[in-house]
Length: 232
Ligand SMILES: C[S@@+](CC[C@H](N)C(=O)[O-])C[C@H]1O[C@@H](n2cnc3c(N)ncnc32)[C@H](O)[C@@H]1O
Image (cartoon, rainbow, N blue to C red; front, side):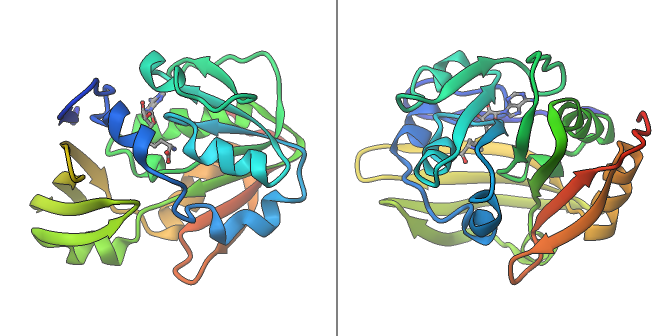
């Protein structure tokens, strides 16, 4: 089954419904806080699904040399100075080099389609240097189970409102509205609630091991590539 995503509002939207103008405005909101002390140990990182480079900028501030991958040229056009960008779908990425850190943030691991999740993890594995670490951030299953329409919070001058929430087993479909003083955007998407064990099974099948979950809620996963690579 395919699950469509779309967005609306001023400026352009990516295929997964993110608005470029919204991400240009959003500041760093501590997204990497749970893994920053680990990231500091490395000289460079590849971020899969980097958007305008909000997190790449933070990586740069932490002393890593960031490279960002995104399928949207409009997003990549706004990368901070000094951040290298690669326009590609994550699934088909073939950058021809390896990084000591590969990040899959922004809950992309919760993609509703099993085959796409697997291709994301395979792309991370293909681009990880020997001894490198893969970091992935999942949605909180508790949050996905509890979220109801209404105001969810505010950050960086943007109010976040859930306009629509529907559930079908472990699939959760939402329409989120982002309200700034002078503009508003929506993003509609479907995401799959995943327990830690679900993600560990997927990563193990793609040649990863040594799993460590970080943060109070255990939403960030660190994984190493196994010596013997098992093809997915
Ligand atoms: C929610 S935004 C987050 C951007 C950035 N990580 C941040 O936190 O600011 C997700 C980004 O991932 C990109 N993206 C989603 N799926 C992708 C895919 N399959 N291949 C490449 N880019 C993808 C979108 O174009 C979008 O820019």
